[in-house]
Image (cartoon, chains in turn green, yellow):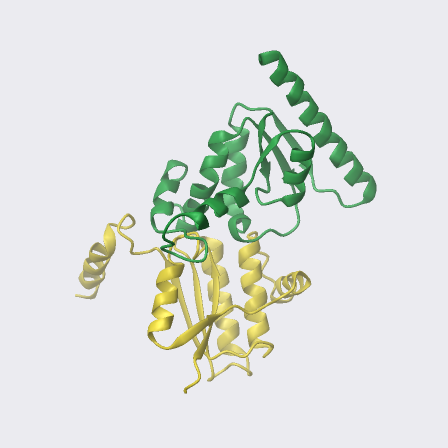
Length: 152
Length: 142
């Protein structure tokens, strides 16, 4: 089982596909869940405190907007753990954690520069493209399984 | 019992900057409540096209749609609080446009208090702390 970072990182469809093909999806929902389950919520609803933008300094300088650094702090554990990545381009609207275009640019840049297997796809707009989309993800997941077996 | 003041919060990134709680506390201190205008995704596309400001960030597009919903009278509020990230250029432009529309519209003119600001401008790790910022402002005035 390989830990696969999906992008958009709050995509339920991608998380479901990765799980169905036998791998562990790394998604923002998991990070947010951990945040709101922490003892003592200092900053409801999602408990992002001023400390988080400071943690984001790992990826972006202090002159980068605070919202970018706060979002990068949430993405940090996912990027750190990722052993592979699936990036979907031109996806439909996504808000909240994925609501800042500049954060998304930075996150994609960091994922692309990490030395891990990566699959990049365009968001499907019809049935045929959707089938092809799922097939490519299945093949990618299978290739990761065989690679993982060879390494083991 | 007096009615609570309804303040619409139009923002991008206030939760992720870690300042949402501060805004919430400030609003509660004046017996007001924060409200978020509900809009559907089609309304977002229409609002962006109609206002002609094609910003890349979905949260800013949502902000435009929410502002449009207020100025058209679809969501009655007493005040609008607009906050975006300090140093984000497209957010600053969106904030300005949303303020102009809110002030210029006949429905909301003279009825709405519109306030725009940047969040996390004066926190301790940025710009040398609030005290440093105040000192700079005082120096500029004198």
